[in-house]
Length: 139
Image 1 (cartoon, one colour):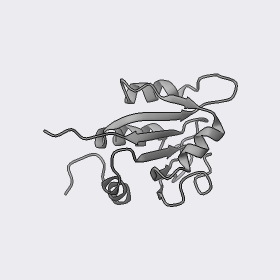
Image 2 (cartoon, helix red, strand yellow):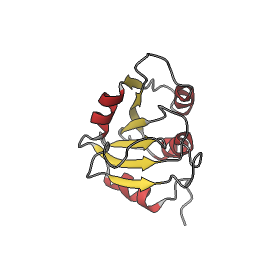
Image 3 (cartoon, rainbow, N blue to C red):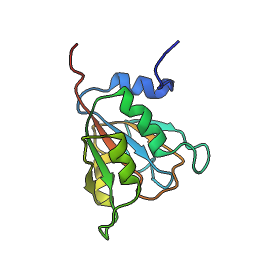
């Protein structure tokens, strides 16, 4: 039996197959996962119902399971900052997310480096984050 918090078999397999530089998309309930993520990425649907599971629920578990090198977020065109950004900073201390416009974010998420795309039931808008997996240091 696993003793880590991350137990989802498909997510574990996708992360085990990914490596340094691979990306993980955690998408809110409005995100068009079928058309705006890499077609070759493993897609996992955790959107059981609105509000469950949230992007921050998933991010909190993944942040313990993988080394995060970088994070990119989708931002509104008006320059405002969605409230979820504070949660991203809290969960990923030392990693200021890079803000992208909606279509820039879509293009990046559709790129060949996106190995895993996770749909959530997150209801907050602009609650999408794309993580780049870092290096696990020896020792």
